[in-house]
Image (tube, rainbow over all chains, first blue to last red; front, side, top):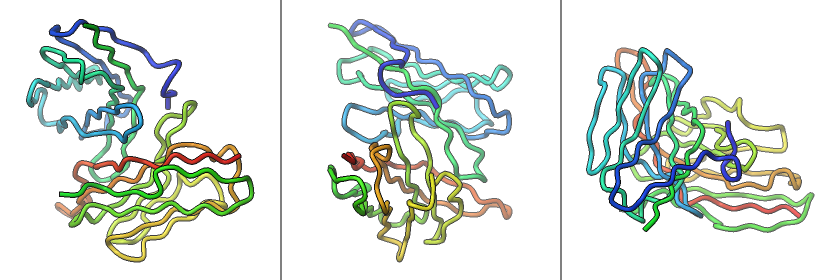
Length: 112
Length: 120
């Protein structure tokens, strides 16, 4: 996995703008995907999930899009707020395996 | 509703000492996972249990690491002897798992706050 910290890709957005965080996965057998948010000094926090029989799922201010053809996952955050600043991880698994594989984290910085 | 509880939150020890990390999963969850997070390797799964039974320990670094789950509400991760390269944040996560059509599926994993371990 990629390192958390100095080499994390960073997305900088202004407060109120929409954010899009992307994730590529490699296992075509993966059928369950999760986005986690990790704030400094805390454990990863579940945001939203999606199963492979769907291509879009919406939550409160967040939307996850799944494109199985190109093995791509994205997290959209509407009206980004300072409290959204964190590292975001996508994770994939086959439901049978129970083993999450975490992708490269993306650091989201919200500027005022 | 309490989430996953881990203790201690911070541990500083000297090389060669035994370290024990503790985890209480969310009540009703039957799967428990131990992860390690470092700057260089990100989040790595060390071991996971289902119904108190270790299912996959292929991520455990070496024999110095051991994990137990004596009951549904408690698990430990032990490092003996500890080494400086073990310094990391160790997370415990829990979830509910069940069988559908003879296939084990796992619901969302919920993480604890982590234990930051420093081995001098």
